[in-house]
Length: 354
Image (cartoon, rainbow, N blue to C red; front, side, top):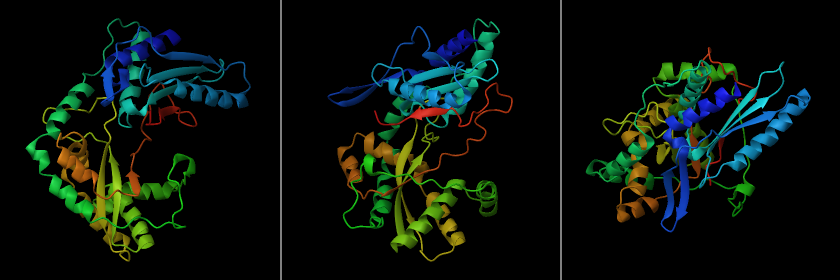
């Protein structure tokens, strides 16, 4: 069974080019290149069967941290798979660790479905394993995106971005003037959870009642809170999108693995005293005026090849707030899948920074 899993992981690396990417720093900046397919898969087998039940999670956490640290941007691998064997009476744990530079949230269902399919085929002795046809490769997408970034069509967006970002609000207030080092060491995390009923209302009732998207509702709530806090009628946020926008004819990314994230500014104009209903309608209208769902901003700033244009966008105000709606992951694994979620779900992306 372990040999079948190792072979399945190897086929996964062969099929999805992005998993073999490497990153090297040169005098001109970071360079991305594709590495050769390794002779064997980066699979680690860890025996926890001799440990007591309470010790499994501690041993798992230690091993997982080591696997994260073993990812190497320059020499690889950027994917590690570990099988934790816990004895005959306990199901094994499977940990998949992938660097965020080569995988995004949309990629996970693709990878898990393919891994399961490959495992079953190898286990049944299939010589020539088969996966659904490849869509546009990560390399082809990058090449076409670079060409599109220098088109006259995209250049027409410059006035939009310049105008709407210049109308941005003042910086967010600080509790103590001049406080805050703005470093990772000084950061803190606040987690808030909704109940099952509240989650259902947000994901199902609100979109149906207002004909809106979940991210528009969340942005409206964020905008209301911040404008009431600041007293301003505008709020500038940086929005993180999935980056898989359909902007180039013939490009299909539905089964392409990689990191396609986009970042772009959004200025929300809201009345601090408005009702949530009014705020939602306003944000909905402003969101839908975004050209090409915002992907053009990054293309103009980083890939256009126009130095003056890049400087214009770089000089615009910067947001104090980053908004990222990851979507719904409760159906990441199919009900009939051989894999079942552990507690916590043992899927991991390493930090984005090298």
